[in-house]
Image 1: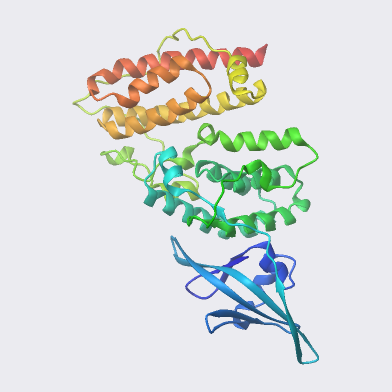
Image 2: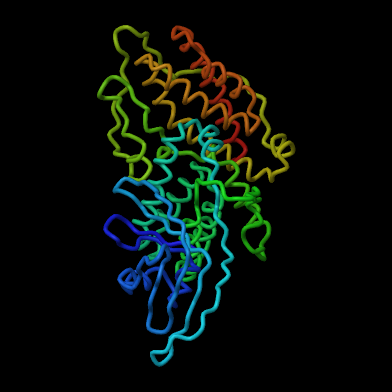
Length: 392
C-alpha cells in the first residue's frame, strides 16, 4: 500500500488500496479531500484520523527524484484500524494488503537498452512525473496521452505498466476509470530496491485472466518487443552533433513533449565527402515474415506489424545517421547501429542485421559511406517487399 507526496506536502499519487482504505472511489476524490492535513507521523508511525476511523501503520519511505524535485513514496506496513463511533474509539483490526512491489532491476534493464543506470533512473522519474501531470487528460479520454505513455513504458521496459495502458487504449472512454486507477496503483508499486525473498514474476500472471486470451497475448507480446516500437520520443539524452543546425533536444524534453519540428537540410562539412541515399538501387534481400513467425512462435500478422514499425523507425533514423556521418560522430553512429541491428535481429532480417552490426562496430569513418549505402539498398528491398505483401 503506497502513497506519495512532493516537497510542498501535496499528495501526488496513491495506489488503489490506499484510496479504498480511506473510503474513496478515485484518486481525484482523495486528492480533493485534503487528507494530508489529517495525516501525522507519531512515534515512527503514520497516524491518519478520519471521522469514522483511526489508522496506525508502520512505514518505509522511498525517495524518488524527478525534474521538479523529490517525490516521497511511503509504503505502509502492518496497518491497524480503529473504528470511531459516537466519538468512541473501538478495538483495532489488522488489515492485510495484497499488492506486491513491482521491482525493476535497473542494472539489467539499463544495460539492455543501452543507457547508464543514472540516465535510466532520470527517465523513469520523468515518466512517473509525466504520468502524474497527465492524469486529468487520461480521465478525459485523451488517446494520444495513452499512446505516448504506453510507448514510454515500452522503451523503459516496464511491461506491467505497458499492458494496463494497452488495455485502457482498447476500452471506450467511459469504461476506463477503474483501469486508470489500477494504472496509478501499479505506478506507485514500482521500486528499484530489490524486495526480500524476491522471485521474478511472469508478467502474464499479474492480471486476472481476461475472456479474450488472444487479445491479451498480443498485448504481452507487444511489451516484450519494446525495442521494435521505439520512436522519436526515445532518443537518448546525450545524442549530440557539433553543428547547431543538427543539434537534437535532450531526451527528457523529447520523451515527454512533442519534438519541435524544425527540419533542416542535412549538409556535409568541407572535410567529409557528401553522400546521398536518395538514388540508391535496391539490393537483394531474402526475407519472409512467416519464417520469423515460425522461429519466434508468434502470429505472422504480429511480425508484419513489427516490421512496419521497424521500417518507420529506420526512415526516421536515416537523417540522424547522415547527420552523425557528416559530423564524424562515431559514438552516435554506433548507438543508432546498435538500436536498429537489435530490431532487425529480433525480426530475423538477416541481411540488415549483418550490415547494421558492421556499422555498429565500425571504427574507420571512411568505410561508413559504403556500409551506409549497402544498408539502405537492403532496406529499400525490404520496404518494397512489405508493400507488395499489402497489395497482394
